[in-house]
Image (tube, rainbow, N blue to C red; front, side):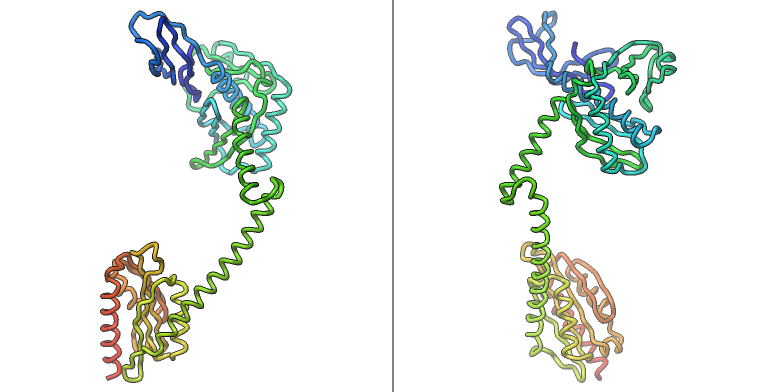
Length: 390
């Protein structure tokens, strides 16, 4: 009596019971005409020629029945709500949920999902009887029964009919009437491949678990946010606004801190003829702030200034290196290029990068090489400035 997994529906669960023997069946699969019962021996010993009673888990079967019938109603609702050309491209019928894949080049709108939910629940309330009949395939197709895309059928087929709502070729298990579904709820809708969408939903007893899970989430959020359930959305929006303001303030403070740190290097400027440069290590400052600080210092010191700064921006990532070069217009006119210069330094730190001739940023993943790289950069910068100043 166990249903073997096929047509998207998973295999039954249950028990094989014999004399001093209990086998817990966890799944049933089918290999051609052989039904393979997969399970665990909970009591006794299983032997050839044992006589056993097969007992399907009735609750799990009823859940599968509800979810399978729901997939048929869902396909009909999709055809009526979206387009008559919509067709099944795959499915899963489990005890706790259903999954339905279908062809559609566009995402389904939230309003259309709500419309389908209303329509399916209307069919449930109307208590349509479900008839199952075996007949020749020609007769079934001429009567309007839907066949699954890509599926192979024999000369005789099984037809599941919800009069006035749905008629499909199907070998799965179903409820006796739509009212047994109780309620239907769409959980999600998303694209899974080009032109293929997926709807996940629940029906029957599984809806209660879904509702209880969501209810617990709302309860937990209410406690965390110190708000009533109907106030949660407004509270989250308020917190998001506060977070944006704090983030802006934090960015401003980081920039000011970077500028203050970099400005302290003014006394360490090295003069080469009429030109000057600064090469320094600055840790715990992000790349954007470091770049703005270097640019600001260049403007303060004059167009005859070249600045190279490097450091580890985040103590949590001690491998990451940030390098920034800022060259004044006079330095650039000599033929020096901030982008190319900082890129060479970055390679010494296991990275790369570049930018404009006057302002550039690069990075690397070898922090242990930073000090040596800055030392080499200072030598190169001094040599080039000496060459142009001689």
